[in-house]
Image 1 (tube, rainbow, N blue to C red):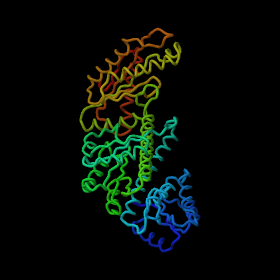
Image 2: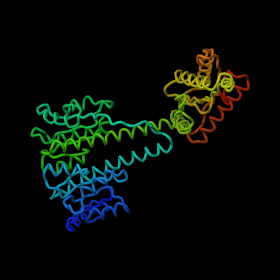
Image 3: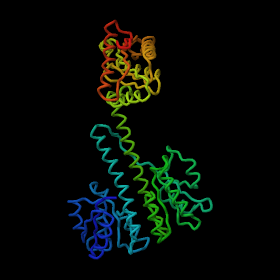
Image 4: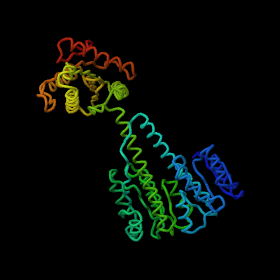
Length: 463
């Protein structure tokens, strides 16, 4: 995986060795001796990840890490702390200072590279989602409400022979929320996308653990639709660096060595839950923004933007199946008079009610859209001329036979529609074919209105 790595280490030999390792892995590498020099590098060429030696008190590397994480412009830079004493307290202090990972010397190259790959994957996902979210916001599609962090859902996966209640109790206290304990079979069997945990914790340091089965479990959780977006934290035996590296490369988001302080495990778990919730919120904003971009806000029907992209695909499918596509242009008769007489609020009620009646009386495969002020488009795949004409007349009668509620201030009133219908015939899937069939349906609609309204007119080629 490509990326820019900055090495911050006051020992020249360390910088040389780390640079060689990073370059062999095809990273772009910068190196400097102090935190002050690192700030200059970051201002010119912002790195994706920093490897920093925390054992040099002269340059206050802990304060440097904390400042990076506190600044919104640099908070996404991943930090791996090196040169830390191999004790639980020192690891926890480095994580508290802002490091995403702590590796002690002598470092295992496999674990180092696997950890870098894992952090850069997470960084790339966050950056991509943030970029899409910023585009949605620029287009005006965003949630203006404040976001509140909800309690995360955490599941501890334990073998039935080793339920690990003490670990669950420690996590309960530290995360201030209940941690569910389930065995792997139940997790895979009962996966539910709506209630899927934000974080799975997998103990692989237990003497009863079958590491090969746990490798398979991580791969399975990462590949399944319901669990693929959940964070995975694996507890591995102390000094099992190669095992930890394999878990990371199989899709685990983080690994923690057995013997780590409960506070370290809680810190890591909380960070993974928060990152998962951030990604969920950004994905939800993107989905809602895309929906808003193709949806008419008043009626909830698709809009012209959606029609311009989806109707050519329907025409393409028509060419594959050999069955024709019918397109209806529908216009509300004398709609301006409704607005002038009863007000725009009453006119909006008519638009919403007509949209609902159209939606309720057509098939799921049919396209229904509002493409203008009082104009709707309906596309019916696999329809003959007779079927299309019958459907158009059915919709016309369904609109005219039941008066519309205009609100408490007005009596219900009758509304009629005019419909023009055209069929695809030999139309192809490109934009010109779409414009042609819509033009034919529009011309038929004009004839229907000219003939007195409240009627259906077919395109002359199929009439």
